[in-house]
Image 1 (spheres, rainbow, N blue to C red):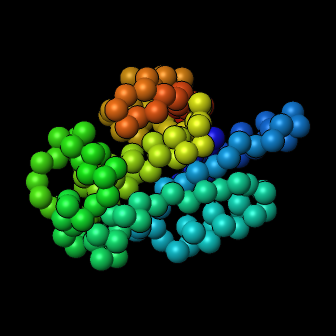
Image 2 (cartoon, rainbow, N blue to C red):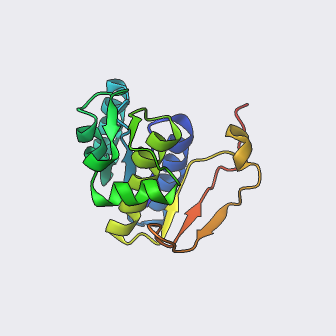
Length: 173
């Protein structure tokens, strides 16, 4: 599978993989994107256009349970008890012990529920063994030690898989 955000790095990653698949007569892997509920409409349109033109099997992954519990609005308070069993278990896994939180996609809690949970459930649902990611080392300090191939061992709520990062060495300039 391939991750795609609609941004330049994941777009380049997708383009390279697509080129290799075309040249070698290989079917392009499935593509997934995470909708954290605050994506610009233009990104949706851009991705929809290229998914159609490039004949991509694109799946939009969104944590509708969290969105419903937030009443469909960012910054609303979400009661943990209103979440489904998986989301409650995920909050326990990251050590969250409060009864509620503000629904902010970029907060630690929101990021985990909207991105990490959806990434892992996609991998589980499709039995993905390896997934391409358009990540660069210079994007975040935490990625400085990243490797091109990163095996994730199975753990509670985390399926075993390999993350492949072909453009890891690229820089912004």
